[in-house]
Image (cartoon, rainbow, N blue to C red; front, side, top):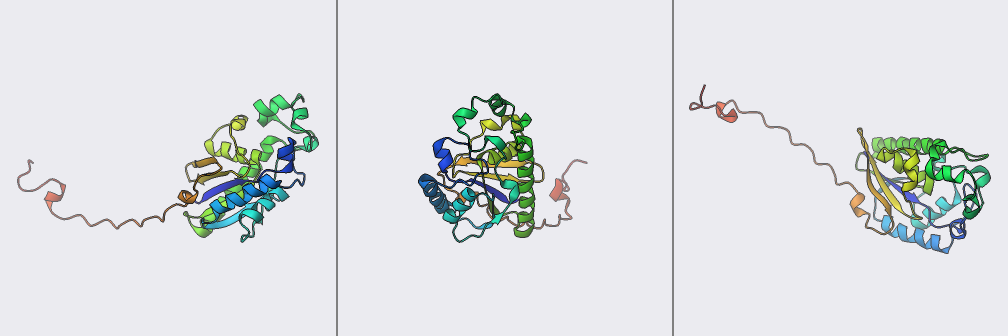
Length: 234
């Protein structure tokens, strides 16, 4: 199957200020723009078959800086979790809410006030990348590499699914701004190839061309080929 690269957007003004951006139109700050440019240098040599993105501006800005020659496809399934009434609030304030410990320890049970459940976020994000991965593989072959730009919690949920762990464990996973995570889906199981990579060489993520299997030679008619021969015991 193809190789999926999950790219988190660069740092935003909300990240810098300690706020929960959610689906608000927050933009990259100076650090985030520098991160996007730097990750673009790492991605430049990769033959990306397809690039898809969350519709939010911080993801689109990241791709504009990282891959200016690419026209990404917007995928609604990759949008940030709908945090509802929590959006725009300082994380320090939210940490005093009764729901906060549940978000940290039992996220599969969380439904944000006036917002989305974390389980629903995980389900639609996983469905989106698996659908895209199958389509990319069908069109471009199993050696294809494609990229999806999204958000921290979304990427963590996709990684948890790839690892076969419950959503309640996804807070143990880290996806830093402008990091790259690589997953390969196969008919039997996904493989997490790289996680939260913020500076490594990405060229090794391109699978080598598959070698054609050599046609098996026809077995000889001689008994000697299978240990027979005139001197063998009967």
